[in-house]
Amino acid sequence: EAVGVIAAQSIGEPGTQLTLRTFHIGGTTSRIVSESSYSANLNEGEIGAVRYINVDAEVKENETVTVGRNGKIIVAFSGQRALMDGKVSIECEKLMVDRQGQTVILSDGGILQIQGRKKESIQKLSIPFGVRLGKGVEDKASVKAGDLLFTRSPWARPLIAQVEGKVKFVDVQELGDPDTLEGRKFGESPLIQVVSGNEVLEEHPLTPRAKVLVKDGAKVQPGDFLAELPLPVISQEEGKVRFLGIAEGRTIQQRLDPVTGNLTSIVTQVDEHNVPRIAIIGRKGEVVTTYHLPIGCEIRVKDGQDVFRGDILAQSENLRQIEILPVGANFKVADNEQIETKGGQRAVLAQWDPYQIPIIATESGKVKYHDIELGVTVRQHRDSGSTDDAKESVQLIVMEQKEDKQPSLEIIGKSEEANLVSLPSGAHIVVRDNQKIDRGDTLARIPRESFKSRDVTGGLPRVEEI
Picture (spheres, rainbow, N blue to C red):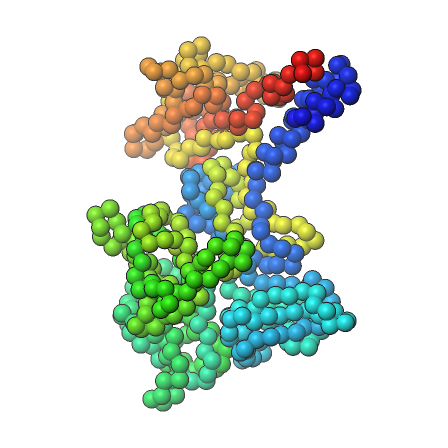
């Protein structure tokens, strides 16, 4: 704004207000527009996956629009492409080729580099446990820009067979439905063992929500995926966090986050004697539900913390982004859709009106005006930019609330019970009395603070007053 004043002075008095207006609108608009969408936090060549959590939405005019609050959109890193031509260099403690001919990483802390003609590093990437290298990607192999270097599961930590043998379930009575887990019956210490005769070659602890990928008695080879342990761990209930089996130096270790500089708790040990869990405690002190934490995950909550449905309790290091969706946001990507950044263009995840906050119907029914009286609680406003007829272009705007008058909309649904929607001062009512509406329809719009006043100079003094 100060720059606008200086520019106006240099131009002269006739141009002062125009210049101030232009600078002010430009600055405010760019700021608000930048806050009207979410773009994927993925760098060039990175591939990711999108997931919606606790979202309440409706499809309106071929667009999915959020109706409820507290919904989230998250993005997880799931793969990487080469940025330049070069040769591959791989440093990894343990890897092997599976039966499909793909190289599988079986240890954490691995590094994949793309080297130039002088063996200089032009791209350096971490390759954690569970990564599958792309076709033809191996140490000393040549790659071109755009080639797929590797992929990983965005929403799970895999359990992978490292020896040849036969699958044996322990403490697993019923797997139940693979999607809903309905009918699942696990004992206290469920395991997948890989055996040869009576010899146990390796065993993998299962969490109650694990997605089991093999059958009891199946033959497996090194590199076969046995199960996936879901990540992030998301609370499905509201309550207070209680740590169980989580102890520094025994099941978790503190590590310094290189990005934030904060200490994070990483699960480092899981076996039948050490089972790190997070219990959710209800209002009466009862255990509502318990979540088992897979090895390698980062705990995001503290013991005793209050959490709500949809809050993330623990996550993998590949979780890149967590965004809260405002009411009225339009989804630009589908749930579980794969996205990537190409040519500097990041995928837009969601968009919303930068100038107005919508009030959206959460149920279908008929609108009844309550305490909406012209000249008392509302005033008329004619939209000069509207192309509709005169009747349709007139809107009612809520004035200041009064002690005995609370302008609101009653939504009378199928149950004949009225759901009262309060209207704040400045709200533009966009529905008529007795109008039938559907769930997800816009009832009113509230201009954002920066655009409530027509004096877009923001109260700046004229040049002669400075």
